[in-house]
Length: 213
Length: 213
Image (cartoon, one colour):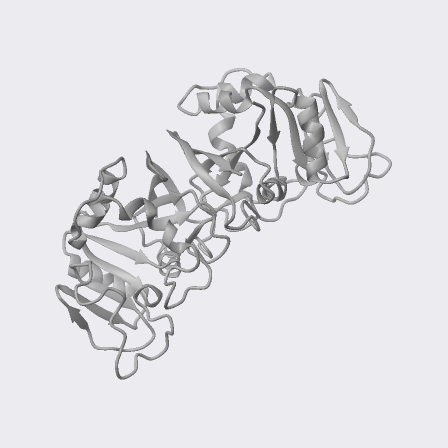
């Protein structure tokens, strides 16, 4: 059955991005370190058309994460630009250049209407009618495949809080960010989780949960 | 070599006690659930003189945690009473009755002077001269053995922030508390950690770190 999945790198103090996010520092101060464990992996480099990379205990975790995903939902924060507000006459095209690494339909949550944007084989559809409607669109686009909630923290927290996530995997990175975008903010105690799997890997612990809705 | 160690159960959203701690609810609302994984274990029950209990993947983790500990430091919050302030004429004797489960010297951080309290084979010494001095006393008392920083969050965070902890183990419990005493609050990004070990067990993931000082 098609699932709604979250997989995200998080600091030991619970942040998925550091403080003071900006154009120069899209993941905030220190936030890039959240992804040190993954960017060296062949499993991460290959889908982005990059050469080389290593294999370690994280490799099967990353391959499983990327497999069978039919659509992604992301917040305006992840798509950018950091300035927010109306899109303007020369609207922001995302962080990823002419060939974004998604290769699937992406639904961007926003308060500001905009026509869809196609870059290579990725089409970004801008959704102003809320998270439930975005999920309906994403499920339709994904067909039998899963829907990936790509972040940031606010978007993930909103889907968790209303019970619309089936699986949640945390890549717990042994750093403290001391501030930034906090996972689980406002989600509260009613969401029940069940530990599915733990994987120890170099520089990261992968904790996978089923969300009991 | 003698180490300073922290081992603590933490919710997935980073709390070591729930909101609204009180006399009736010393661990706050929902906080008791943080210890569901451990109270059923023989490894936990035996040192407290309780019968029965099971063995599972958490058992060796708990036995290792309890082994070779020569002294414990705790905050006034953990010792109680919740009301705080001066000790008064009939001072609070702790939560644990006539035979506390420590069986070793315990140093209690407090702003209010008080004579030592001995209950069975546990002596509580009340330290008003700050966390560094308390650690000196505890190390002296522990000799070759390790010093355990027993909590609560504030005490652990203070020791982490000044670089006085050698090992940190988180027992990550798949619950959300939505508020309460937060681990790592105010510790900041300068503390470096190195993942030592991950253990998957029923209802809990054990993540052990070396703190690089």
